[in-house]
Every structure is written in structure tokens, then in C-alpha cells.
Amino acid sequence: MERHATASTITQQQIKVYATSWCGDCRRAKRWLDEHHISYDYIDIEKDEQAAAYVLQVNGGLRSVPTIVFPDGSILVEPSNRELAQKFGLS
Image 1 (cartoon, rainbow, N blue to C red):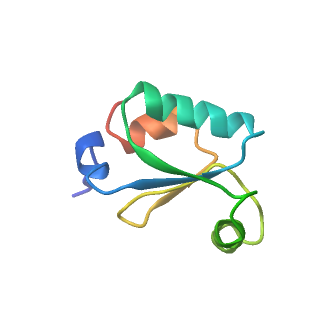
Image 2 (image 1 turned 45 degrees about the vertical axis):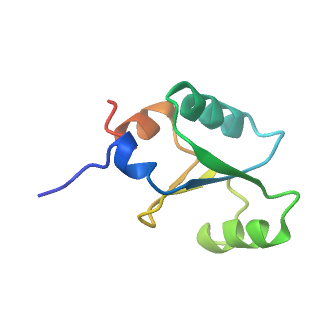
Image 3 (image 1 turned 120 degrees about the horizontal axis):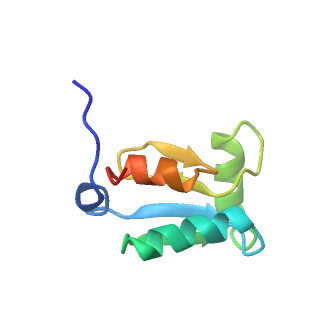
């Protein structure tokens, strides 16, 4: 049986959004999270070398952003609004 996380269960622990200030997909994902009142830690990989190294590690050497890490260890990379809605059980 597959279980889907809900916004309330996911946000009990903090979500981490690895992003850059100039990235359009990052701004869109942040806007979506804000509109749905979902809290997260925003980490600018251009200002945090360890965060940049982490993004490279989990994305096979690519600086793909946004990379969104959930408390359960799952990761969404460059997700669409639809993928975010599905992750939070809002679709």
C-alpha cells in the first residue's frame, strides 16, 4: 500500500530548498510553497559552499536547482507545481 505524505506531516520537520537567487524555477517553487503556507529552509548554494557540494553530490555532478529535500529523505529536483502538489497530497 503506497502512502502519500500530506502537507501537515511533511512540514512537522523542516524542508530544505537548495536554490539560487537568479533561478526562475527556484522562484516559482518558493512561491508555490509560500502560497500553500508550507515552511522551509531556503539555502542559497551560491553563498554556501557545503550546500553547493551537496547539490552536486545528489544530482550526479549537476547544479540542478531547486533541489528540495524532505524530512523523509526524498528529493525533488526542479519539480513542477503539479509534482509539488502531488508530493503534498494537494492534487
